[in-house]
Image (cartoon, rainbow, N blue to C red; front, side):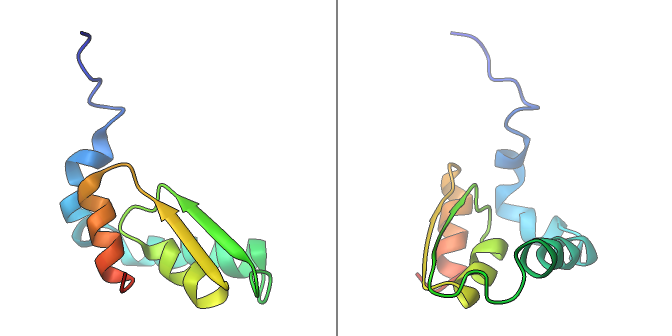
Amino acid sequence: MAARDPKLYFYDTIADRFDELVNAYDLRRRLEIVFDELLGPGDLTGRTVLDVGCGSGWFSREAARRARHLARHRAAAAARNRAGKSSGQ
């Protein structure tokens, strides 16, 4: 069996610490770009949103505020557990 390329799985190695490592300005700006500039206010009203690769749930929480239903999937178990806890699920 071939060894896993560590570059491909980098985020799995920091999943437990991602929230303490993330740059707060960068995160806020990414949320603004996606939800305010690209989607605009109200574009998710009454819709179902699927967040694949949700990490620790920052985009899921914002989508949940704006959408009717939210489903998310995170491959790394540690990040998936954190996302569920932080969004109240």
